[in-house]
Length: 225
Ligand SMILES: Nc1nc2c(c(=O)[nH]1)N[C@H]1C(S)=C(S)[C@@H](COP(=O)(O)O)O[C@H]1N2
Ligand SMILES: [Mo]
Image (tube, rainbow, N blue to C red; front, side, top):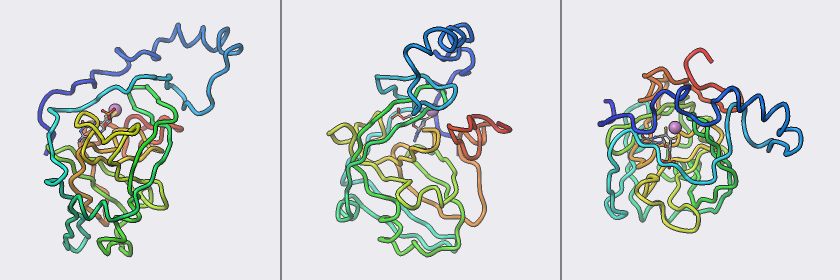
């Protein structure tokens, strides 16, 4: 079940993350902070990142657009599969949003091309369901869980482009999930399945002690936060 390979980019955050240095924090708050201001879009404990770091718990799968498949399954075990051309037949939208990684970087105003999860659920006839949770599956075995409600109403996206170009393999191309209001580990790269479930089931990082929900504004990094 676990994704293969080491935990690249996910050594213990409290030791290795910039922005986690108490001394720097104090200086920022007490002196620099008041003059420079702090962007209110950056959640507590996060720092502003201008690059786009790659964080993958394993090797990068190479999936061609024409080979990409998304299996959407219902709690009763009905599976509907979408391919690339099915996805492209749905409304593709441009969106700008902020993203927040639990390793403490946040990136503002990132631009994506994506289909809403609403449109995907509609297309596979799963919009009406008694499922309350989703276990998201990715090529390579990565999984992550979240309430279905958090993917609805334009809050969850099936992304195919980033910054004016097709999504690169490193960032989850050809297709990744994007759930900007939760920590970015919920945004599964190389999306391969949406398993609609009545009960919650912890995914890869969630089984390793990360928070079941992961709201950056409430700093829900680990179980118990
Ligand atoms: N399939 C898969 N999706 C994944 C991951 C992963 O290891 N495998 N890492 C997650 C984590 S922890 C983060 S922070 C983001 C990183 O996305 P990026 O590499 O595009 O910055 O992807 C998330 N989605
Ligand atoms: Mo992450």
